[in-house]
Structures are given as C-alpha cells and as structure tokens.
Length: 362
Image (cartoon, rainbow, N blue to C red):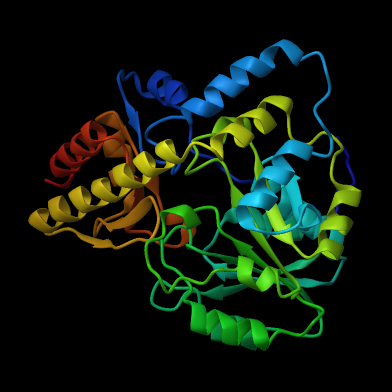
C-alpha cells in the first residue's frame, strides 16, 4: 500500500508490553510459570472490588456513567479535593494521551526523564511534538537537568514518582524549588502510579500543589496497589480549568461500568490495601537479604519493583529465567543492558525467583 503517513508517526517505536503468561508458556513449552514482570499486585484484585463487579454485571446492557459520578465523588472525598478537580481515564495512560492531545501542537516540546514510562515519548510524537529526554542522575530524576532544557517551546514536563524503572523518588524540598521555578504556561505531569508503596516521609506530595492552583496534574491508577490492572481505570487530579479542557476531548464512556464499580469499592478496601503493602515490603526485604547473600548488586526501591544488576547481558538472563518458568523484565530497551526488573510476588513466587536466579547466574 502507498499510504501517506506523517514522519512523526513513523518515528514512534511501538510500546512492547510484557507477554501474558499463557503466551509465554505456549512459546517456550513451559508450565506453572510465575510472572514478576509487569509490577502487578501479587494478591490479585481487591475482594470488595470483585463483589462490586459481580453485582454490576446485570447492567452490562447499559452505557457507563459518562461523568463517573460515584467514583469522582468518592475520590474527591478521599483526596480532599473538589469533584471538578478530577478526570477519569481508561488507565492513567489514557490521561497522558489526553494531555498530549489537548496541550501539544506540531513543533512543541515535552520534557521527560530518560529512561521513563515509554508512553510519554509515544504520545508526544503522536501529537507531532518533540520529546526531550533528560538522562537520570545517579538513577534518579534530574530536576536541575530538566529545568535547563526548558525552552520557549516547552509545554509539558513528565515526572514519574516513584520513577519507573529505578524505583527512586523525588523529595519534597527539591520538587518545591523546581515547581516554583516553572513558567506558568508549562504543565507539570506527576505520574504517581506507585505512590501507595512509598514509605519515605520526605517524598514529594504533588496533591498539595494541585490545591495551590499551580499548573500541575497528579496521575494515579487502580492497576497496582488495588490490583485492578485488567479493568484499566486511572485518574488525574488537577486544577478545574485543566480538568475541564481534558474532559472536552476524552471519550464520553472511557471508563467502563465494571471499572467504575470496582474502583469505588476498592477505595473502601483498607484491609486489602494494608495486606498488599505488608506483602510487598516483606517481599522486598526477602529479595534484598537473598541477593546480599548471593553477592548480587541491586538498586533499592520505593515501589513494588526493583532493579537487579546481573553483570551480563540482561536479555540473556531474561531468556534463561523464562526457561525456568520465571518471567521478569529485561531493562536493555530502557538503556540498562545489564539490569533486569523484578516485581514482588507472593512469598512462594519470590523464593522460586531467587532459586531460578541462583541456577541461571551459576
């Protein structure tokens, strides 16, 4: 076919998600594999969410509530913001796409850490704008480096906190200084998909800045801590004018009825959230202690995943672990050719991962 495709679309490298367990088992001829590659909740979905979803099944012939009335008000009460400060998305990456669609034009620029969530680069290029990548500094987001790359064409700045894939965080004082130095026409996007896992009291809290009416949007998700990745539901908290503009261009039924019902119920499932935190933090300590005994280097995290330095090509270690039925993520495509990323699983899965890594590293 002789299609006329804009050059900026051709420049996009497709996002390659982690393969489902079923596909990998077929491909490699293995059974009983474990997946520790996509930073998913090891406990599964919130039980309260499951019950609410089951109760909502009878109404699948109806369109979803396009305004997300119940979920928006539940979030507003929990976060102590107004409903008009909230926008719902089919996953938080839906809102990332809306931000590019609503605020970027051809020739504009958006700044982001390098590496970071690959969707930032994709949505910016899809808008005909230019992604400006700023390398990490000691595995952390370099806010000073980002500030130095601002030009008259800068419209958006993406920061993920905790950072993916390193698990590092931005601290409150440095973020305050950074935000105070921002020109008023630039929107700062704080992607906090993993914020629930943070235990460091000094981590930047972007919601406080949203309430100050600065041009900032906080992005969060139900995919990780609440175990609802398969439902695709996320949200943004921002100033009312920014939310209103994004609501103009979002799909009218972008969050399904089941996703809304599950998310509303999950917000009340404090017991499940506490169990998730305990499982993840205990799992991290297990991994750290096991890797210390194995004398394998790793990078401590503020999230539910962390990086392991395997001191050899990460793709080879990834493939070898696959043959042992353990699915992790090679970080070669993120610019870390000798690192793999592992998310915490159930304790039996963590033990199996360590035993497989011992075999592979030998």
